[in-house]
Image 1 (cartoon, one colour):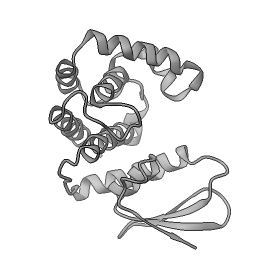
Image 2 (cartoon, rainbow, N blue to C red):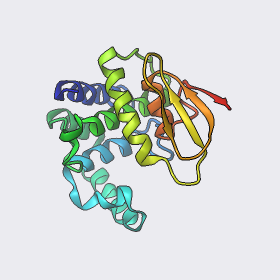
Image 3 (cartoon, helix red, strand yellow):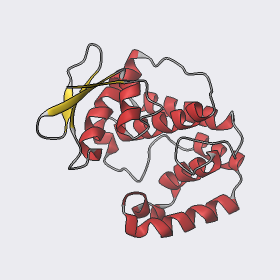
Image 4 (cartoon, rainbow, N blue to C red):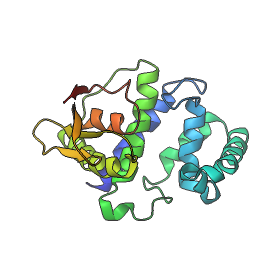
Length: 198
């Protein structure tokens, strides 16, 4: 995957954010669009907030820093900043070694968080994007799948399936890579996938 594709999806996300109000809902639980813009800005610009994204013990500090950013800059300013900055996410310094897949996944998922929560038109993804999202889904699935969860087989048209979990497969999840990755990232109700018990 190229930096061009990553940066394209950064721009698509900015377009989605710019098309809704700061108070518009997202699929990210209690976050509105302004909160989402703050989160993305922090991933690029605020290293002190990064630990709390993944480690619960630091979550309160990350939340406080996000509130400070939200008070300091308005929604439109944050979107403009996101557009002007490069597409890389400094909090993921090894991402270039995996074809910028983490950043692409971040931008794609959050674009859908805005679009689907606000009934904005869905757009078919290019074959290049579907291929890149499939690679990201495989990696992210293995990182995000928690012990104790059922083992599932994940399949998409024209692609080799992969398994999440250990033990006997209890279900198959089928869909386009762009829908599978939403499901893997926990947007299960919004993802257009078919889950077939085995």
